[in-house]
Image (cartoon, rainbow, N blue to C red; front, side, top):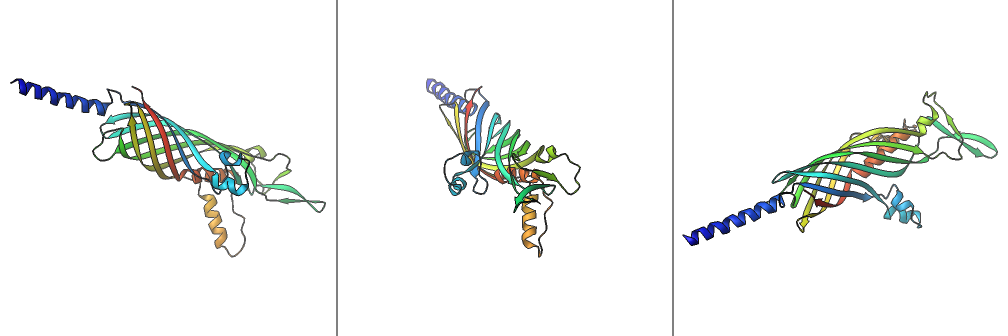
Length: 263
């Protein structure tokens, strides 16, 4: 009888230990700080353009990045949900067929369409669900993640020292052409691995692919221009280039994250 009672106590202890491992001592809320990076070979950004190196080196060393602090909740033994904040910041280049730049050439002024540099900053949100794979419990092991993102961006073009002229009969004020705001939404899928150490600290590695619902107009215009038999000025605005810049950084990413299982 005593042996039976002892065996039951041991089994109960093991079951309790397993339950505590799944619940992480009754804690279900995780605070995360995560970042997504990808190569920025075609679009130098603050990380690379601020370095005192050549332009070619800037391109190959440059990285797109998104910062995403979030709160994650364990909802069952195989899944978690979360909500968070998105931040993105990058320079870009673009043209706008509503504007011309005054260009001095052999003593006369010629109004030409020219490429301008600008900067886009986006703030936003994300919401996601993570499904853990295999025989591991949340938040430990391999996972698949589906995420919805929103970006509310503002861009501004650098026109310091330039003479600008509005053309094509546009009714927009000059200020709204070179500085404006908008929104862009997207979805992405992610595969990764969560590792928990010391029962509190969560480390994450992952890779994601996705798309925004917009931002393709610049790419489509370039493909159309290459296929055309004659030159045609595409109907592109600075806003199209800002949206394209976000898409170019969003479609692929490598994620690094650190989290704290708080309570």
